Image (cartoon, rainbow, N blue to C red; front, side, top):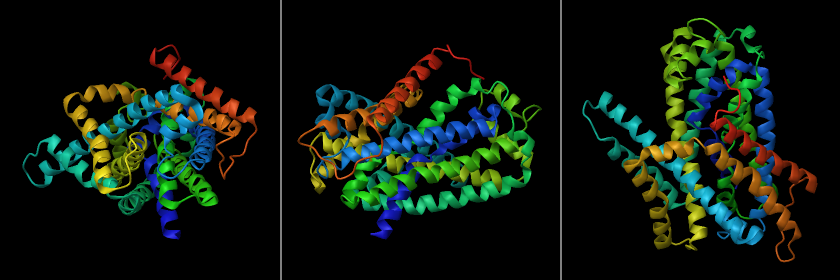
Length: 407
């Protein structure tokens, strides 16, 4: 059991920490570390609390009938169920398609460089999907085992990269708060999605059973480990890059805040090729661990929604529903998913900030549903979380219309 608990924590951590971590200093560098850390901690607290709310509702339902579809159906009715379906499918299909496309691109580059001949990107994307999608199809335990191996390697690479970067830190670079409010709006969207792990919670409840305190600890650890890693990464990366100059956050803005240019800046400042190799290796593996976690959440959501039993034939049907649509859309119309990913923070705010307090509020009023776990907090706290979710959506919409001051 101890091993499965550690594996479950690693699934949440691996799902949250994706290649998007590289984007964090791009949007936070101009505000300074301390201001960015404040926003990071606030969003960590928000997303940890809504994770506990999701756990409360999940535990009120029977195993394998406890995903977001059933949670919304039993607490919010038909309208809530429709909103949940729309949000989950748009968010998770977009993410899975993006991971497939990204993995195909990486593998194509590697085969060109290592094998010396060209393999089409769609072939590599299909191979990636068959291997790691096969782990999702087989069982949560197989996802656990694959994720442990990859996350361990990912963690080693990130720690090595941070250790190589730390000697180059200039503490004076951390204190940049002038005009910091311009960076808040973009930081909110990037940092919010960096704590998106909630769709895995029902899968882990099915995996471990209704062990109330165990799941509570898994969520707390699974959300806090990313907080520590993000904080360390922001401290190092912001402390590394100066505000002005040829290789600075100012010049980064002139290059459209490109991740590629940011990595080139790190290469120039450190003059250490190993550091870049560690960062690239980390980001490539991070794509795979996020794919596993997101796919697992989507798989179990569809199994619940279409009432597919936990048998091989039904798991095969669910796997086809999980992986064929995003693969085809990524192949035929990838820009549609890129556009959808641009609004990922809105989908996350609906699914993981607004819906949880609404579902818990209705659950606690129910005379037929009872959860063995009750998340802390007065109803006024549920109302505050709901208002914060609405505020995040409004901010994202205004930001997409360029109506807010940004960097």
